[in-house]
Image (cartoon, rainbow, N blue to C red; front, side, top):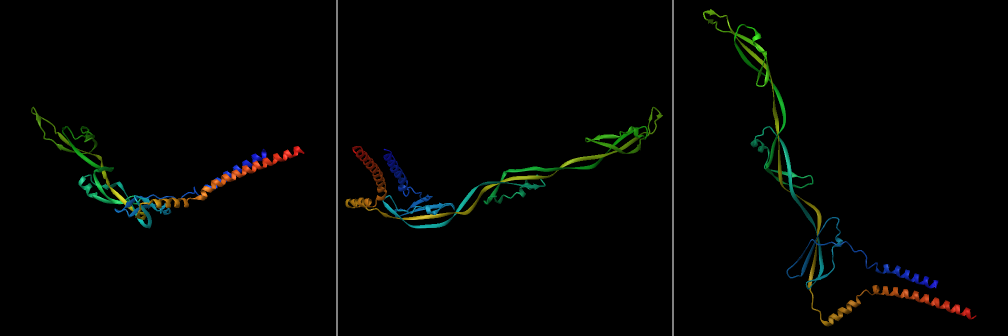
Length: 307
């Protein structure tokens, strides 16, 4: 019984080992298939053109070349053309420019900004861009300060004497503090009051000086946007044109149909069918051998018992 089990296991293992090998050719990986980007057919149906635009990593071996039937025609590849295909790339682009101006007057600013400018992007796309007037902005670019000397005079009339004690030493003028710098005296007319003579009166003309500091804008920064389409042409694709010529299919006669059936039968891949049959036969043979060995052992044991 043990021998029978061993033989059956060997037969089964042989069958499983042969099965993958029998179908290896049938399931082999095909070449990478390329798909057309467009297909055109002429009016009478005698020609079909399939266009393939392939990148450098695509393999043209994957372009189908086999005959095929479509709309009552049988098509056969007659030519495969190759040509370099310029790839056109375009997009909308906005470029911001900045420049310096001494004035914020818009007429002066626009004189610095051309209506159109040619730009080239970092990735190589080029185009003519147009100024957008609504994006023009003018901002101060910086400030500076300046200091200058200022002076003013004050008159103090009807003073009893030429004494500076009657004159303020500092005054406020326009928010600035000025310091007394100089005094000039003028003698007023001597008058009388009720017949009594009055002494001389004086008018002091005082000069005050100081410094005034003011800030001013050094210049202006102008910014504006230019917009438009940028594009480029890159020769990084190859176009293949597969030309198939078509011939009309003739209606099949009954006799021809039989002939086609026979031809199909003759063209059938009989080895693929015979492989499973051979595997079955091998398995059956293994089982038969096992039964034969079992029967022989039983007969041998019977003979020993008779003896």
